Structures are given as structure tokens and as C-alpha cells.
Image (tube, rainbow, N blue to C red; front, side):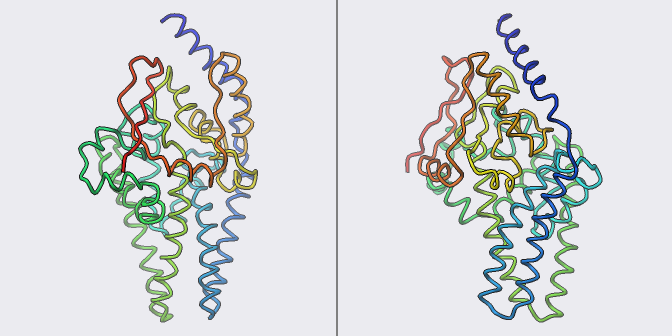
Length: 344
């Protein structure tokens, strides 16, 4: 036990040392990413609403949804104060761009901190996607069917609305765990109602109610597909507790091999294990941290972090093999839970 503790402490110290120079946030880098995505999105919105052509309207709105998705992902960096490092900016702005899409950012930011503490460790994790064997056994037959096609249902059917509802439910459940949660719930509900009251009144005055509804419906579908896919890929099939919280995050999160452009659009979350291990490292330095961490793991004869083969391929492979979190394998010193295939 003593040798094991020494090894864990030694690894932790080395990981801190190799990442020590990567925690500084460069405001210009984050602001540039935020501004480019925001300008592209707003340009597409202007194009959609300024054209009388329905086909152009729909096409521009679909593209706007794609870039709005990546713009919203910037708010994830803001929860960790790593986009610009400016506290006022990373506190106010994410709410302003989230509320138009009905996204309860304040609630999400609060429960996201629990997620970082509980991922792979505590099944109460509010962002846990994968169900346990016990939950499956106790579920209604309709829910069991749902779990057999969970990826398809979540990504294509529940979409953005599903994520919004889930986040509000988790916020309500966490009221006794997070002292400020009632205030965050009230803030989001009030902000969302105010923003959409203004938008709805403008649509009425312009006589564009149907187009207004279609616009937000298209955005919700596109954003739901992108964000739900990212949400599922980050941890599905990797639940398990290891020798320390830090090591747990390295192995209970998924890294995706992708292009530098896609990594930029995703805000570095293709290196999700690195982000969980060091959430205060900004997105543009996560790839460097990944290489340094791999060398530390190799030095201590620990398994290297894996790079899954791209977003589309990994989504396809995981969605075809749904699984459950099973009982802890007592012979496994890492306490990784067994993954049990879901039978249709």
C-alpha cells in the first residue's frame, strides 16, 4: 500500500511539473475563436432573415445551426474561466448567447463542476450518459428498448430539447448539493423568458411567426445532433475508478483523433481526458499536454491514453454496441466497472 501511494504521488507530481507552463490563458486566442464563430453565425442569421427565398432561408439556417453549436461550445471553456481569463466576460457572455437557444447555462455551469468531481467515481454524476445494469433491470420495457437505441434516440429524436430538459431536471435534483442552485434556476428561466419575449414580439410585428418557429426548430435539430454526439462520445463505455482522481480522469474520458480544424471548432475537447485531468489548461494547449502526459504514463509503465479514430467513426462504432455499467470486478485493482452489452 505504501509503495502504491508513493507511486501515485510521484505520478501526480510529474504530471504537475510537465504541465506547469500550460495553464496561462491567452485572452486573444480565446477571443479570436469566439469572435470568428460568432461572426459567421450572425452573418448566416442575417442572410437567412434577409432573403425571401425559402430554400436559401433553410440552407442558411442549417449552416447557422452548425456554427451556433461550436459557438455554444465556447461557453464550456467559460465555465472553467479558460476562454479569455476575463472573469466578467466568461461570466456574462455565455448566458447572453445561451438563453436564445433555451440553454440553461447557469444551471449547467453549476452541475458541470460536480461532473468533474464525480466522473468515473460517483454514479450521481449529473452528466453521466451510460446507464447501470441495476437501472436497466429496474426500468420499464419501453426504457429498455430505448437503451438499445440510446444513441439514435438521444441524437436524432431528443436532440437539443432533450439536453435542455435533462439539465433542468439535474439542476432541480442538485438543489440540496449546490447552495446557489435555486438562484441559478431562477436566473436562467428569467433570462430565457425575457430574451424570447423580445424575439417573439419582433416576429409578431414583422408578421413572421411561422418563419420564426421554423428558424428555431432547425437550429434546435442541428445543435442537438452536434452537442448530443459530443456529449455521448466523451465518456460512454469508460466508467471506472482508478488509483487516484487524476488517473481516473485520464482513463474515464475519451480522446478523439481528428483534424486541427475540428479540434479548434470543438474547443480542444477532442482531448477530453486531458481537459478532465487539468481543467484549467486552455483549449489551445491541450494537445501539447496530451503528448507530455503520455510520456509520464510510459515512464511509469501505465497504459497510454487512447486516441479514438475520428468523431464519425467512433460514433458509429459505439452506437452499434450499446452497453451498461455493471458490477465492480473485485479482481481488478483499478475498480473499473464491467461493461455489459445491451440486448435488444
